[in-house]
Length: 73
Image (cartoon, rainbow, N blue to C red; front, side, top):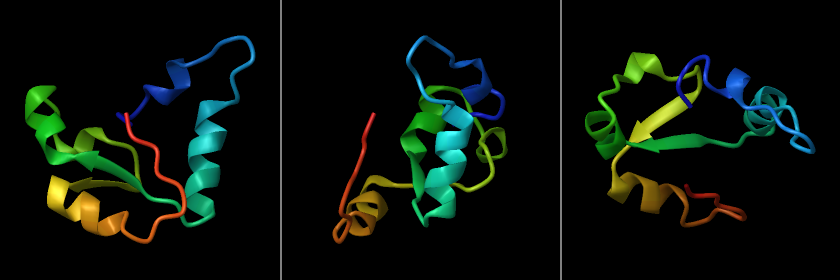
């Protein structure tokens, strides 16, 4: 979810990842990044794409309680 990184993902049979990201957001989907990843990967909140929310594990679990679909990587 770092700015400029989705544009690098291309491959045979893969959807356009930027369009997929934009579509998820337009449909009301949320993109959540664990705050522990920032320190672990030496990243700052401003390194991420617009619309990415930085949350702790507790906030993440509370956010997904009523989710229909959840993807986690």
